[in-house]
Length: 107
Image 1 (cartoon, rainbow, N blue to C red):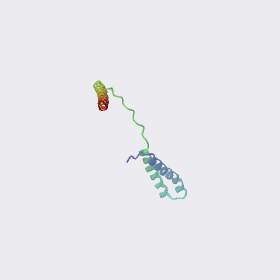
Image 2: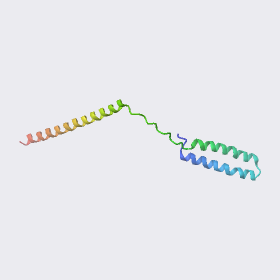
Image 3: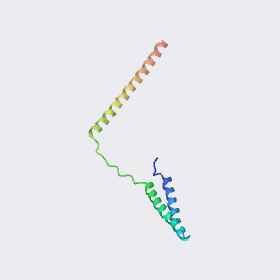
Image 4: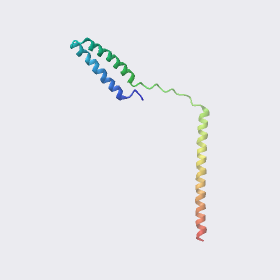
């Protein structure tokens, strides 16, 4: 499971907002332990925010094309062209054979 989804990032953001907003309310109510808990949970929320943040993709390093690989690609392309020509010739010959058989049957 990929933790860095937008859903989790938004969820952690809401969690962080609630705890940051809860701190002054807990202080106003005179509950220091409650306020401390909001501080701790805000820290946990910040760590979650950092973990779920989308990272910028690292720049792709360009690699020089290997001349052997380029030659191999050209060879494969040439073979594919020749195979297509052979297939086309076979289809044409089959078509001529069928037409010749039809002509012999009619005579």
